[in-house]
Image 1 (cartoon, helix red, strand yellow):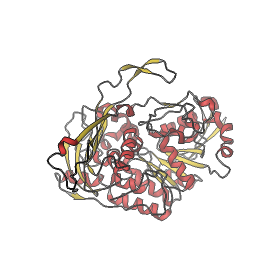
Image 2 (image 1 turned 90 degrees about the vertical axis):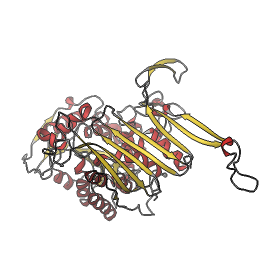
Image 3 (image 1 turned 60 degrees about the vertical axis):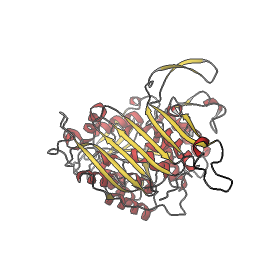
Image 4 (image 1 turned 45 degrees about the horizontal axis):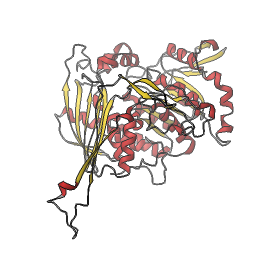
Length: 514
């Protein structure tokens, strides 16, 4: 039997509502039978974990991580943190005792808190925040001031004031802050970032990031789970507050920032009444918002955040002076085709690519300049050549099969197994072997998000989605929403600066520019 300990004295709302609560649980203790945990329990891997320090170097530090907010999303990360060789212990924090007990039994967790304040006073080294989106920044600041490293689900913040305090707190404490921005690790974003860095697009002209997520198709349950009986008050969260995914599709490619925005909103009249201003905690009736941004490098970006739409997907566009990347719906998504396998055999495989993607560029059959160096305007059109490359295959996330060629430091017995949910653009060789066969999510991003947060804590280097780029993703969130309330008035966006020059990033391509 494992002793499962609650710690209480609630002072911060973790799972539901906006206002703090002061419920007491008076030190509830529960015994959790070891047999209640499910398959692949970390308890079964304790012996293996004990030898990890030797395998990864005798100077390897191991950390205690508190996971805060155990909704549908947050609980999916418990397994990954537990399995990572840098993680010594996972501690849970949520208001709901039944959820704590259930997840503790499933993952063999020995400590759980119903109070965020008490969690921060404990001996944990870092927190992973998965609470409501409008609470992330205040909770991250509180954790940093308590001396804890921070991983936060998106968005980093919803207002200029929140983001400014967050950036300043990271600068003052010197602690790790890692944003869980999944779009950064999407295969198409990785491809575009590499191509842009090598100059393959030319100068940036225009980009798009669209997040189409119909409320009825998925969001009802998560909002109820997170906010309880009053969930309808909070389901009207302004769409532009959740701009981070869409913004990252462009800004994590170009490394620039937004400077001003004009945004329009669409007033909702759906029968479910979720965007009724009379009940909205945010006085918001816009379920769909469209924003046009100016970027510091002279470009333009359009972002759609839609919660009433017949589509449910993300879209990305990058257009430069020399090339463009454009996506469309893949009508064959889910269809079956015959594909050749690694061993040479053929098998029927479902098409897992949600999008069709094309990279188009211009090349020259010959130099369009005259012998004297002047541009040959009359004949240039005869020498230009357009090249189109189908990139649909990079969207397929059937899992990277481990082979002799790509196994890296993995033992030979891992050959034939898969890094689940990944594709050809993912650098799976840098993931720990303990992640092989574990669940992934959001286009292969979850495992990289956890690893890069812990790797940053281990090395002292900046995570790819550090606080300065995280602030850029959400810098236009509150400003865009305010613009929509003013019927599209053009408003300026604050510049949160860049990391210190002496801070190295885990990803060498993450170099912020104007």
